Image (cartoon, rainbow, N blue to C red; front, side, top):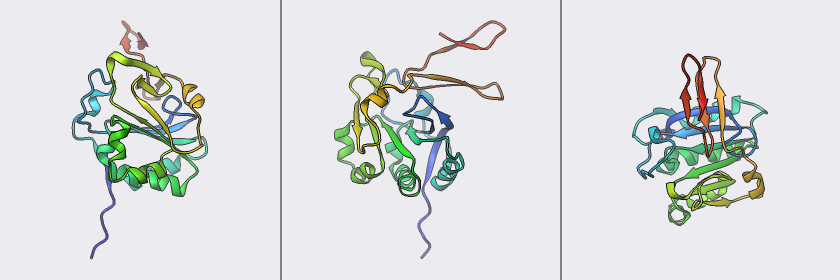
Amino acid sequence: MAPPRAPSLRLHAFEPRSTANGPGVRAVLWVQGCTLGCPGCFNPETHHYGGDEVPAHEIFSRILALGDPVEGVTVSGGEPLQQRRAVLHLLERVRVETPLSTVLFTGYRWSEVARMREAAALRGCVDVLIAGRYEQDRGLGRGLRGSSNKTVHLFSQRYTLAELDAVPDAEVMVRADGKVVVTGIDPPVLYPTPGGPCVPR
């Protein structure tokens, strides 16, 4: 009998070094696909089904290759828990094979996550879980919470709430090819200036 095929993630983007998606310098992956449809979501382009199918072990290799500057891994989306098998496979490897910390964002409420068959396994390999739908009329934009209804769950002693509150609300990065990447829990909206680069609103 052939061994089971390694799971793949539908990946929207991978950022090797971010300081606005959790404590310290972090590798961040945004998965592709979300059916929750929160009005006002900052990442609507991650909602549709699609994205690049990338084996979880390849993403793990990318993370390993980043070396010492990276303190941890953050998984966001899209909706990571709509790809639970592959996300769990990746996070379990990170937990067992590296000293890196893990942060997971989900639009599911904690009560929904707790009913998932994989809930115990997730608790075992996630340091920080940010849970709950984004609610536009309860916008917060700090402490890794986009809206005030979201809940923070610390499953280890790796971080404190004060350390999460100290994470920058946003970052703007300019790649060598001129591409501008804007990320964080309260990212600015960029507008092109006549004859010049994009600037924060």
